[in-house]
Length: 411
Image 1 (tube, rainbow, N blue to C red):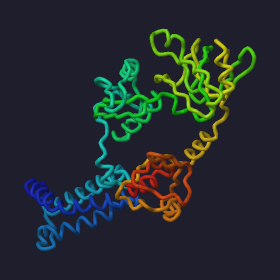
Image 2: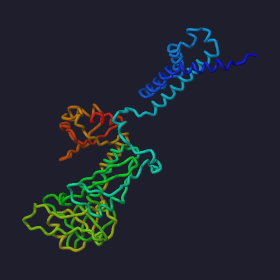
Image 3: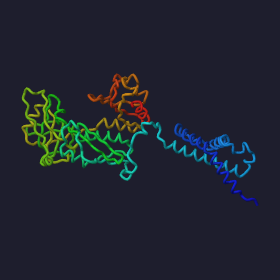
Image 4: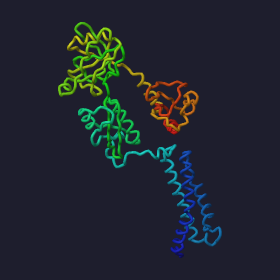
């Protein structure tokens, strides 16, 4: 009865590992490249054949030079080790090709993201709560912040998707702060732990910038329904008539009694001042009211403003906004797999100086530009004659792959 020569097997394992380095590396690359670019897995038989051929070329150990080696335990063991190493390396390359995001760029690799140490703070919807740290700073060149604004910001928090890059989190939080707190400017710096350092600037001249010529903003004491927001259309039932206008500010009586500045009535303008702007002050308020007795400021005509000023109190009715077609359109686009993205045209982008129609963005990149924002103007649904400029912020819609490709073009 013959025994298995342990020494020959150990030597075969050693020689097999040496000869398997190069063919295993090639098998890994083949598995990764085919899976990443074609989503196809190379059959194992092809990997085995290629691995054996490369091992023979690189090592000369498989009996191609010495036939006696191929017939020994050493040669058989070496062949098995090489083939198994090639199959394992190929499977690892295949897995990496499947897990690697498509269209990976240096830009996406450089984007910093939140630390994995905060996984316990992620909720079931994949969101994390961003909280401010330190003191809320004021931005130089703007009026000082009130204690109320500092206190509200310090105690607030905001939820965002945890998979967003930190730069995108900062941009989204800045936009929310400007919208929810009526700020003219906001600057946010978020660290890897999801903590935000915030600096903001309050509005200058309050609501006066939002009063168009020929209109007046006038305040009156009323019973505020729950959920009143700026932009709602309301009707005041006065003793002699009714007045309908747009809500530009609202505050409960409790907020006034605690020392905050109430919304003051606008003095009745003279007859020859129909086209002058009204200047009045307002501190930031909540995005919606919580109900109860308080003050509401309506935007209405000059004649209606005089009628409101003559009354001390008036019941108010909020008109329904009805169905929003914009939200319906967004829902239809999302249901078809489209997504929305806000991108900035870089100074080195090939799009700078080109008209939208000339470069045929919709046909070339399969995305559509919905809006365009510049420091001094905003363009909704820009036409083909609109010329793109460096620094333009464009809001685009399209499939995720198309948006990633277009983002590289704008950089």
